[in-house]
Length: 194
Image 1 (cartoon, one colour):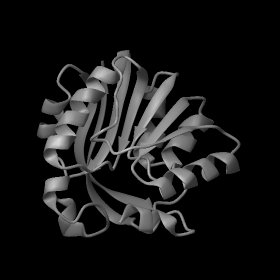
Image 2: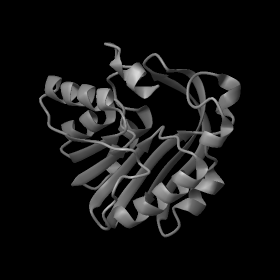
Image 3: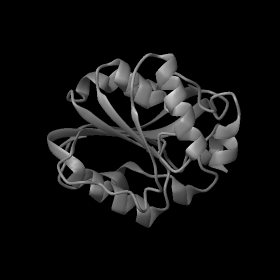
């Protein structure tokens, strides 16, 4: 599905950064940032434009190629890694920030990835996340088609045990990101520090 979606000429979720990331970027310590399920690179390029050393990981070869093209268009450099998060190697204490924007995974894998995120952050490092909650299914404006791939705030807070929560909320907001995220959305947002 992702190879097909990202093979199109148009950027599926647009070329602009996610609104929540753009609002909260000042919370991220300068340095090395890992972007999970980064798709076509919009958030990675935004972070590189703000002086971060960015590693973007996604399972889609087409997505990572478009991410490199977007970086070149914006005269910045990002590192891209084609990998399934189930096999991706999160090195302990190696990132100043980890960014997860609409990275929807099966529950057990999500729990594993979030544990690894906590480990991968350097002391003082920040985890920033926005994801759809199960209420998103009533809006039908993007995101996973099944509630099992969404997340609620209480589960998320359990999964990031060991981080200090700076901000966390479940809200409904207008999401305008390309062809596939358009309209009112039910999201959980998080900023937490190690």
